[in-house]
Amino acid sequence: MGLLQVENLSVNFKTDSGIIPAVDNAKISINAGQVQGVIGESGSGKSVMALAIAGLLSPAATMRADLFNLDGHDLTRMGAAERQKLISSNISIIFQEPTSSLNPSLTIGYQLDETIRFHDGGTRKERYEKSLELLNQVGILDAKRRYKEYPHQLSGGLNQRVMIAMALACQPKLLIADEPTTALDVTVQSQILDLLLKLNEEHHMALMLITHDFSILSETTDKVYVMYGGQIVESGRTYNLLSQPYHPYTKALLDSVPHYGMHYKKGRRLFNLKGSTPSLDHLPVGCYLGPRCPYANKKCVQPPELRSLKGRKVRCHFPLIEED
Image (tube, rainbow, N blue to C red; front, side, top):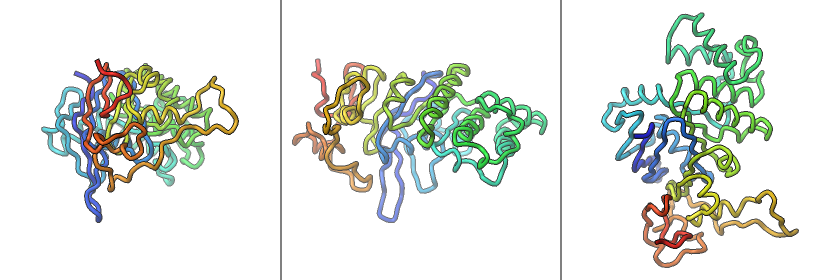
C-alpha cells in the first residue's frame, strides 16, 4: 500500500448562490519517495485538492472520500482532532507566495521556533539549534543573521527557502508544493526546484508538485494528474503522458506551449481552445470540456467515467488512441 491513497475525494463549498463542487471524485495515490505532479488551469481544483489532503480546508467547505489512507491509517474512521494530528505530523505544504505566507511583524527565527515548538517541543536552545540546522539545510547562508531578520529583509527566493525549512520541521513524509516557483524569477525557480528534489532524495520524502507549467513536470516528476473543472481527466507516467496524451484537454495544453527546437512561421498562432474555463457554479451538462472540445459529439452530453486505458486513467468518451 502506498503512502497516500485517496479515492472519490469530493470537496464542495457552501455559498449564498448554492453549493459549488470544487473537486469531483478525485483519485490520488502516491508512494514514499515518489515525485508526482498536478497540472491544470486556474480554477481547475488542483489547489483545493491539495488543501483537502493537507487538512486545511475552510469551514465553508465539506469534504467526502470513500478512502483516505495515510501511511497505513484510515482517516475516514478518525475523529477530527485525531485526523488533524496525523496529517500535521506527516504532511506539509508550501504556497506560491512565500512573503504573504510569513508574518511580516515576526522574525524568521520566531516563526521557525514556533513551528518546531508545536511539533517537537524541546528547550529554547534545542529549538534554536534546530532552526539554524533547518536554515542551513535549505541553503540559507549566514543562518544566525537571517534567524534575526524579518521577511521584508529577505528576497522572495530566500523567503521560499524559509517556508521550506518550516515545512521540514515536522519531518513530513509528504511535501505538497503548490506553485512554489510562480512568484520567482527563472534562475531562482530552478534553484528552488533543485532544492526540493534534493530534499526528496535525501529524506525519501514524497513530493507533490502543483503547477500550470509542463516544463517543470517533465524535468521532475514520475507521474502526472491533469485536472479540469474539478475533475482528474487524465493521469499516467509523465514521459508517456507528455509524449502521447489521450485526453483532448491534455493535448490542448501541450499544443498551446511552444516547444524548444521547433520552427514556427512568423505570424503563426499557438493553439488555443475556444471559449474559456467553465465556472464551477455553472458547469456544462455531461463532459465539462464538451462545449470547447474539437472532438465532441452527441454522446458528450453524458458524463464520461474515469477508465483505465493502456496504463493510463482517462475521463473521455473518445480518447485520442484506439482501444484494443
